[in-house]
Length: 232
Ligand code: PGA
Image (cartoon, rainbow, N blue to C red; front, side, top):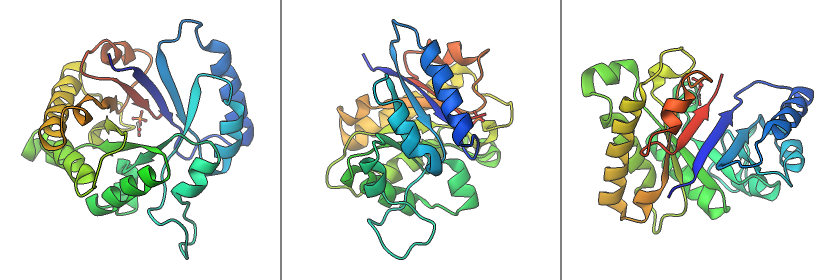
C-alpha cells in the first residue's frame, strides 16, 4: 500500500520565529501511531533551521522551488545541490504560482525534475488546470499533459510525487470534491503507467487546493488520492 503524505506549502509565510514555533507545535501534536509522511516546505531562509529542527522526528523538509542549473550566474536562485546538502528530501516543482508568476514552462519543469533527481531530491511535481482550461478541456487533460511533459525525456525515472492542484482551487476556498480528485488521480496514474511503466505508476498522487481541517478526511479516505498538499 502506498504511504500517505500530508504536506504543507508555507509559501511566503512565517519568519524564523514563527517557523520554529509552528514546528514545535506540530511535533507536540504528532500522534504516536502516525501513519503518514509529514512534509513541510518553509521559505528558503528558514529551510536549514527547519531541517535541523525536525532531524529526529518523522517530519521531513521540502523546498518550494529550485533552479535547474548546478551553480552559476543566476542571481537569486538556489540549486538542488545546496538543498540536498542541508537535509532537504523533497522539492516542489512547477507549483502553479511558479508557472503563473515566473513563467515556468513544461520544459523548465522537466529540466528541474532532472536536476532534482541528480541531487538526490524527490520532486513533488505540481500539475493542474485553470478555470478556463477546466471549462474548455475538462478536468484531467491539462494535469495529465503536464505530468507526461515533466516525466518525458529522462533516461530513467527516479522517485517522484505528483500533486494535482486545480489552479481554480488554490487559495480560493473552492475545492474539488474527493470524487473529482479521485477521477483526475486515476487519469494521471493511468497515463504514467502507460507511458512509463507499472512501477512509476505506483508513485504517489496528492490533491491540493483549499484543503482544510473540515474537508481533509474525504481526500485521505480515498484509495486513489495518496495525501494532500496544503497551503493556506
Ligand atoms: P491552498 O494552497 O491550500 O492555500 O489552496 C495549496 C497550494 O498552493 O499548494
